[in-house]
Image 1: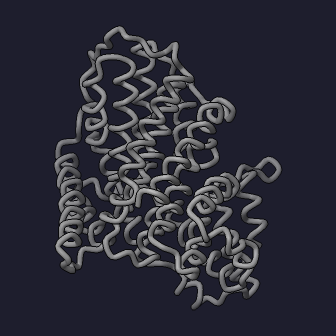
Image 2: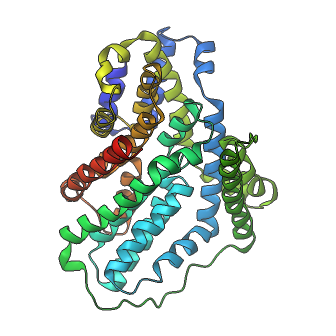
Image 3: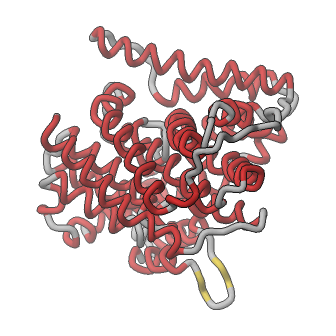
Length: 406
């Protein structure tokens, strides 16, 4: 069953029908239930309610940020300060990369795509350059935070990490900044003809915001920052505070759910398929883990060293989604007495896998689908031509940092 699910995820096509990842995963979960490979009580126990609560609440905040126009206004503020093409690409890489560390990277992909396409048309810059900058920004930037992407969330919560923000920052902040710099250098080399020294001008004002909803999401955004800071400071002081990742997400979503007259519209628009995907994934992966198949398939040498974990994460995530890979691979690392550095290698490798090819991250697919609505696109080979050398460099950066520096 696992092989069939992974094959379908890789090709995502059955005859004339184009399947979505959540549909494939749900079918796999229903199949193992129907065949008795996992019982209904076992399936319910397998679903991590803390992860589901966190994702739901963060999707509420993310959708409210998009609908209010506030997230688009923030993105404009980063970019409007650029004076030339180099500064514009740097602003996209570091500005939107930082935002992706604070919010789920798929959210930034949704609002960022029309923004960079409009900028490319107005400034006469190759749209492919800015689309690649966006893709690399949100994939790489999300590495350094436990809430930047779903696979990091699994690493933070399923490992019982006491202070995820502090741990991710300590292990992954510096190499992520270096990796964003590497993305700029690779883009500069591959698209050298697009980097003009002439100044760029922006005549367009930031998008208008929905006043009441924007006010509420400002408060939600502040809650995320404040509670995250409290968690970090408490960890540094050696104090224990009941501020977990689900608590942060619940407090952030509460203003929108309680006080917004747009709550129904927001709830209808959140990413329900991804929530279904996670519930189904927990059931299927528990069934696979109970069978012992994955443990016998992956040798112990794959969890013994940081370079092996990074390499396997990058390569395997091209064929199966990085989230189920982490769900299966992390328990093996923990059972082998895996160190925090190895868990961070898993988070980094499974995330920067999105820079290797289009299929390595869902955010890449979102960017391309939204770009095609605007008449632009990136082919598999256009992406890989830049993504392959960049990913090799980034694997080296994270490998050296996690192996030699810490």
